[in-house]
Amino acid sequence: MKILWLVNIVMPELAVHLGSKPSVFGGWLSGALEAVRKSGNALVIVMSDSSKKAGKYEVNGITYYITASVGIPGERSAFREILDVEKPDVVHIYGTEFEQSWAMAQEADVERTVVTIQGPLVYYKDAVYGELPERVCRDTWLHKLLRKLNKGGQSIELQRVSFAQRAELERKTLQRLKYIHGGSEWGNAVARSVHPGCTTFDGGLILRTPFYGEERWSWEACEKHNIYVLFSYPIKGFHQVLEALPIVLERFPDTKVHVVSSKLKYRRYTGLRRVIMNKAPDYQWYIQQRVEELGLKEHLIFEGYLNAEQVKARLLKTHVFVSAAKIENQCTALGEALILGVPCVASFTGAIPETVEHGKSGFLYPFDSPYMLADSICKIFSDRELAERFSEMGRRSSARTYDPEKNGELLLEMYRTIDHNAKENIR
Image (cartoon, rainbow, N blue to C red; front, side, top):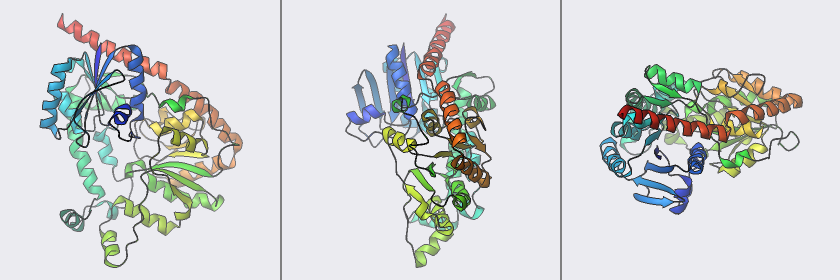
């Protein structure tokens, strides 16, 4: 059987082959790739990336295509050529949130195509603001002027508009394809809400290889009162962590928060430039302002982007991992923390309750209640027995959720089912 993937990153082994630094994103793809490779099935991986050299590459038994086409018409043409050459038995589109997904959905054989929901924009678009103040979200005339002058002006409202536009393409993709892999019970429910007649498939993530080792979190080895959290765009909820932190600091004044994502670029604007940013803020500026207002700068350590081994090392030193998202399907970072045994606190949203059982393998809290987040963190900080119980139960449950053998077999069974059904329809 020949399987063709469409992905939105340059896969790590291809990046190395091209002399580039591998992406720290999409780690679950590497695990799924190994499952297909071990099965003996042929795998072709397609990606659009105008920043890399377009062409066809053979690396470690995998065929890769990089298309330089940008925009749906160009991508459709490029994908059509690849499909004609490779003639795959199954096409697997990873992610519904990108324009390229709609381009491939129009060209691939519907009877042989499945799409995996990663972050469904049909619902994410309504969560973009993440409970931020309205004054921070709106796209003002000043934002528009700054964009026209190529001086920034990236508002959160502008991001919402982009999400809404892409959500319409996502809706078309989901309604066109009959096979959808939701990635979770919640993801499958999202699929059926958009396309009631679709066939959904189960199967969770396969985490990056380093997280399946014997090393695990321990109370003795962790750095006490250290928190691990992600920082990207408002949906991920970093601003809510900031609101919770002063409450934590009242009880644990030595608390440090390791922020693993893009580094916060402190902009020391004064005078007119500061006035302009206050009237036309972006998310980073809002975060900087709240950090200064709450006096949190000395408690935050911005790590930048880390590779798998660096993430693992940081997590093993962490006292509490926090997933603070407004909405979330499967959270890879949360899965990596759980399988190492790191005590976790997560917002009650999307598929997260399928991963963390409140009071047994971690704490869940309402996204709009940062005081509940603070209370949960403080409980774990102050109770070794609770932390160790969460560690053991989280590790035990996640070993089943992220079992690479089980999830690899579910992935392959999905491909076999689609291929079998397609052949039956021909007869």
